[in-house]
Amino acid sequence: MIDLLPVLMKGTPTLRGQLKQWFSSYPSGNVWRVASDYAIGDPNKLNDVISFVMIAPHATDADVQQYVGGVAPKDLKKVSAVPLGLMQYLNCPVPITFSMSFVLPRDAAMLRDRLPLDGMVLLAQAAITFLEQRLSLYTEPTDIEYHRAAIKRFQLFERDLARKSVSEKLARQIHVVAATAATVFNSLNDAVRPQAIRWISDRDKLVAAHDTVVYDLAYVYRMVQVMQTATPEQQAAGNLGASMAPIGCEIPEPTGDHRFDDFVRLPDYLAGTLADLNLETMTFTRDKFGEVLNSVLANSPNNWMVQLLRRTDEGVTIRSAQFKGWN
Image (cartoon, rainbow, N blue to C red; front, side):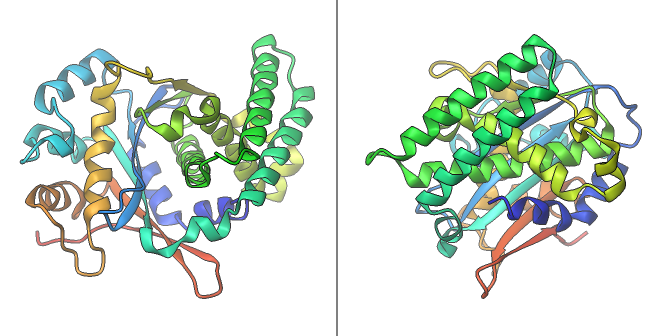
């Protein structure tokens, strides 16, 4: 997975250029929100999808939630027709959102081959070493406390991976979500120079598993990705992490209402649609998926798909794409 991190950045230059241009009217130093949802592991779907929607600081949380909750009170799986107001929000010509949806064909067995169990154990050990080395860079008690706590969570993750009952599939999903999240955060950081980024995730097994280590793994992958893609001048300048906006993770409640459910509904509609879509024939099983495809994704400057495609040499090709439709 480590070798995939620079590929995710270098394989999406057009997308990242559009992201920067799309949000160019916003000054640096704002707090940005990133909502994520996942359509992973459904045997009845063609693709596994991880969708992120970046939300500009154009309105307060309460205003965004009031609007989205008002026009789209239900998830995609619970509706027969897609709410017009939600589609208009995702495809608004005013730059208020930008989405990146990572799509992996379910029949490729890509993650299983690239992330065997022993490889994930080695990655957990490497993460522990990496965090221990970074501890010396910090003086603030909160930074030191976080790194020490993250080390303990990775130690727990390593122990869990040694158990016979461990779900290798779930552990692989954690890795791919962390890697794609790191790519989104670094792309947003480069585009808008935020003061901070808030990650608002949907409730999911992969988020709760292993003491929410997915958040720590995203942090490690983000740092590694920055180091891998830095120019010689940037590397010579010193601490690369100094220019990276901190990430605040909104941990979803384990049960009951999700206080940020309205935010998560935005990537939910994208992930659900792309999971169902046959990318070779551009067909879908229900009309509502076609509504999202034609009214949100097609001809959209701010809603992008990133495909992870398996090569014949066992490598991975990254391709960012926009859907083209009839005007």
